[in-house]
Image (tube, rainbow, N blue to C red; front, top):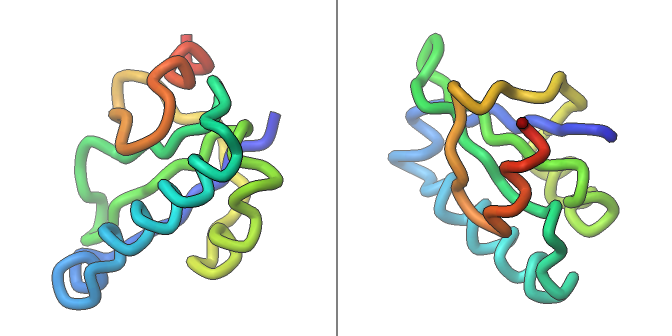
Amino acid sequence: MTWNKVLLASEQIEEQRALENLKKQFEKLYIRADGPDDMALLSDNEYKNGKIGIYFTPGCQPFCDDLISRYNGEECEQPTIDHVFLLDGNDYALDLLR
């Protein structure tokens, strides 16, 4: 199962509305994919070095591949449930972290 992560700087979020745009694009893909149980966006609880990590669960593939590329996302380790929260998508995807 492959996890992906996009890093957004606080300036991108505040000035370019990057997080809001990412969520809107994800929501369209999620609806188009018919809302799979394992498809969700998760967010870090805190900024690190002025950036926040947005995680794409393995169920986001292949639906979000272009979106991940557009935001320069990369494969990553699975986050821990203590450090993230559900940003969008199916809350059943949180079971992947248990």
